[in-house]
Length: 424
Image 1 (cartoon, helix red, strand yellow):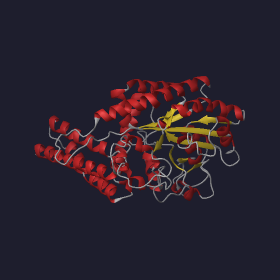
Image 2 (cartoon, rainbow, N blue to C red; image 1 turned 120 degrees about the horizontal axis):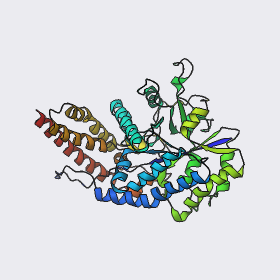
Image 3 (tube, rainbow, N blue to C red; image 1 turned 30 degrees about the horizontal axis):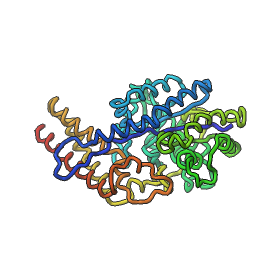
Image 4 (cartoon, one colour; image 1 turned 120 degrees about the vertical axis):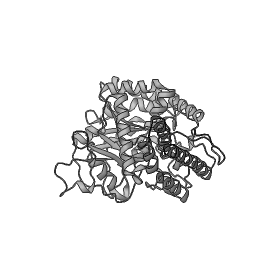
């Protein structure tokens, strides 16, 4: 039996407005553009796709199951400009057929620079998910599926209030050079949780089946693709072929696949609407849908997924070069995280409510700048498997993005200095 595990990433960043070196306005974010893009994507994807998910769960008596990682940044924007979408996700939570997955609140690369900030953003995100949907995430995914052995060990070591492990496992990319001859169709584990590790550890890894995921996310509307048009029966057959060499079909993709990256007139919604029926009926009784938690609960790891170097789900290299591939990106990230201790110290040691409020605004803006998209916009390389961020990139060139970001960062430093001076 093949268990189909659907996971969707829902994210929008706080895009920066054009900010010159002479600008002194302490508000850095382009609310007009952010609102316009959020409403556009809500109309094209979030509303119709989420309503369709609700319909499919009802139609198939709860046997259709899905999962989401929804960043704090998009939740904040939805609350401001499209609260009805949050209501749709609340209805999904009430079905019991939808799992919400933990991640960093600001969709950041914080693990690379600050384990403290990484942990704090996980805590912030989990609290927000619990506040909105009444659930506590038990599975984790790092930003853009960035993962290596150190990430797995750190997340595995996180404890809940009861002292027990916080997460059952996490999601990662199924990278061919690591899997070698193996398939991403099983539960794996970090190397440190094998023999000789602490007894009782059952931390697992679900690996994205990028071939089948990308057939939907990238190739679905490509008329030059040899498999176009993709029917649900054909796709269900591909899923069924996993039987005998695995038991999981991990379909991980951006939620914006439905209606934004693949437009409605491509037939993507009709494909999604009919896919559960095809999975259930093409080979009756042999395939079904599960959530990541259910996968970890039902299946034991079959072996180690040894990832000494950082991987991701971005482009054909499946590495960090989309965010750290040039000197601009490395410099921007380094300078940003160099501020962390001073920003947090100013907030923590504020002598009065007024100072704390000012320091809190600086801390919140600093955290918004940790969002990975800002550094993606500085990328200078070509993306072979679909540059989906180009839809929403506000810059004419990576160099414009870098200059704009550094101008904002320079002003944030000045604000921090002013807060510290007042506190003294």
